[in-house]
Image (tube, chains in turn purple, blue):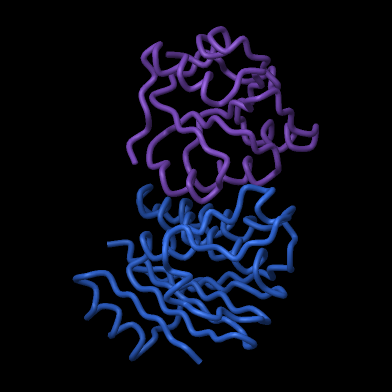
Length: 115
Length: 163
């Protein structure tokens, strides 16, 4: 599954237009807790979260995040988007809840990351 | 001062050797960690990770260093009056030291229990306070040493071998 497929499935809005949406996404993880995300991400992973602060972008300096989906209509500030652009990290917004977004992606075949 | 040690099985001898006769580090990095400054928190850990990456350290080891360093850096920013981090890079390992200005950990054993947290509301709103900081450091390091008590400063150091 590519990021482009994911944008379509979640009726998402891409906040980083330069991002390569053809990139393959192997698996995903969903959480609003930073330590959970750090503990569970050991391979290239798509992150679904309601957190929009700069530490979400900082996480991508530590672990391999292939993109971030902001759920429940959350939108990061422009400076956060700028941080993502510097790192070539794709950001996508969706109005769907974390549960619904995860369910749609799972049903479409996107597996959970190995923890 | 209450003291806590955890050494990964099989690393006892290497850890003892390192602390008995600490060799001089090839490279040392230091950075200040201001209290509750979540704009810059994590930057020190990212710098260490990037340096190790340039030195050709294995990606899985890089991930473990980054996660442990980041958790420790966030702990200082979120729970202390500020402090500093020091990273000694040796040919076969990294030795990281985090020292803060208090107010100390009342019960280290309790703080090691996954899910236990004393984070305040401001810290929790940012997504911290899962109660996994110290457990996550323990899980990703080969040796973890903490020295602290309520009303005093906290000293935390860990070793991760490059194997």
